[in-house]
Image (cartoon, rainbow, N blue to C red; front, side, top):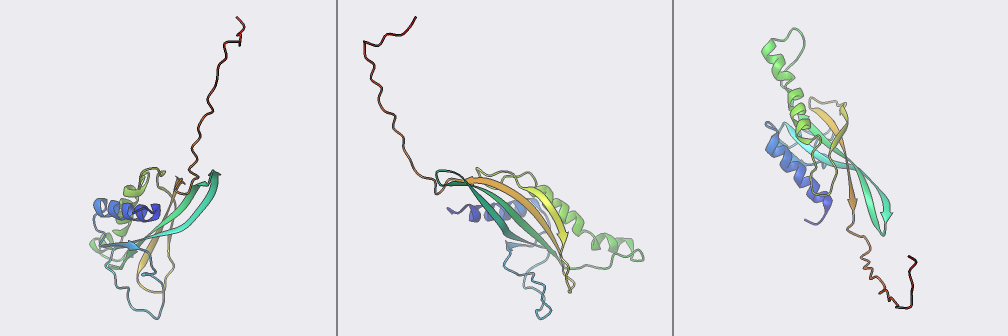
Length: 173
């Protein structure tokens, strides 16, 4: 792959698959968890992580090269297990809130990690719970990532002018 976006996606997908036990489905976020009353349960396996490149801001640095500052969103989708109220038996509560441990494992696998050569490190910037009208729980974990893109930089070759030294030049002592 030539695209840094494709390579970053594939690296994140592989990192999660190799380092986070319990995730059953990892893909691009194409709206699979869209909160719509008219749809049935999404056709994905839970727990899942959907990866989205939400924002990329670019700034010119020199000769057609740019810096990129990105927001990458990992959506952790979970089907509810059971109630977690104070009257629920302890064993069920532990299962009901186990997604906190899953989210923590996901974060530890991604935080401070560089997905491909020549990028910065992924740094968490925000976590939020999606407000939904169904029983699926979605946690959005946002990371920032920066890198420099030289793929379209001008290919300028500078050849220095030869310097001719004349014996008539006297240097001061």
